[in-house]
Amino acid sequence: MESLSSALSFTGSIKLSHGLLLFAISAGANMLPAVVKLCCGISYPHLRSMAGLQRAALAAFGQEIAHLQSRGQISHPAWSPLRWTRHKESEKTDPAEQRTAALANEDVFYLRQGEEALNEALDIVESKDGWKLEMAETNGDVIYSKVLRGNRKVFRLEAELDASPEELHDILFVRLEEMHEWNPNIRRIRVLKHVGRNTMVTHEVSAETAGNLIGQRDFLSIRHSLKSESCVYLGGAATQLESLPPQQEFVRAEDGPTCIILQPLQDRPDRSHFIWLLNMDVKGWLPQSLVNKALPRAQVDFTKHLRRRLATQNPENRR
Image 1: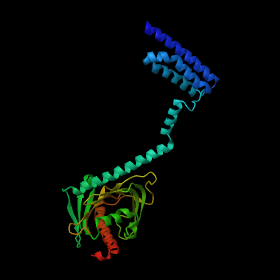
Image 2: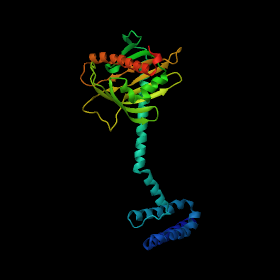
Image 3: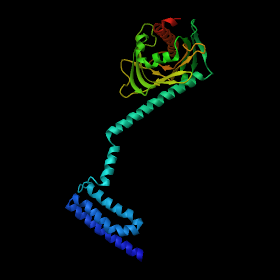
Image 4: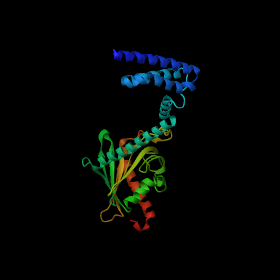
């Protein structure tokens, strides 16, 4: 009986508080602080002795205020916890923050894509099965080929270059946009986006040169670099960028996964063992037999132009 009496008394206090709340609202929002204090005083003995009803009382006040505010009959004063909560919620959905989060997600996507491309390319290079000698140059350069699933043929060039891995990393990655200055087969390369220091999105356009059997292509690629104690790794693959869809004047080819491994020679740390996995889908309607002849020849030409670039940079290392 005692608990029932307390409950009935508490119900009466809630009804009285509800009436006072409606009176304050009709009189103006400025009276709300005083009235809420009065309501709390009326309900305090019951709230103290009936802890389980505290949540019900607070919920009743909150629901009433939220209901009236949604109908435009009341605006939350500056001291109101409800107003503070709504303000924090609006901050969470601020368009600027949403754009920042989207950019962060995009950066993570490109970073992961670059890392995965490098790892997949290294798996291909390090696999022992299926490699066959494609060609051997008189200067010691060797190219091997291998057919992957889907009947795509990839090519692995191995050579020795008169430059340290750091020098080659600087030329082939850091100063990538200068490549057209020493490689006539490239019209331009532009870095569209940097993701940290070791990942970037690039757009490359090949040059229209005599003897180019494949023809002019453009490439949209993710490029990623990784340094270890003994090697420098450069990886890449085709990617997508909403602001640069395929263009009508070019056939968009796709790289990757592809990689370059730069390892110092044991007896000559100023020279490097250069391994380049070329894995490319040139697209278009070219016969695959023609493509398979053109790609290793492109590797030979690239290495020739790179050696000339190194000789210009380090005349004492001319071979």
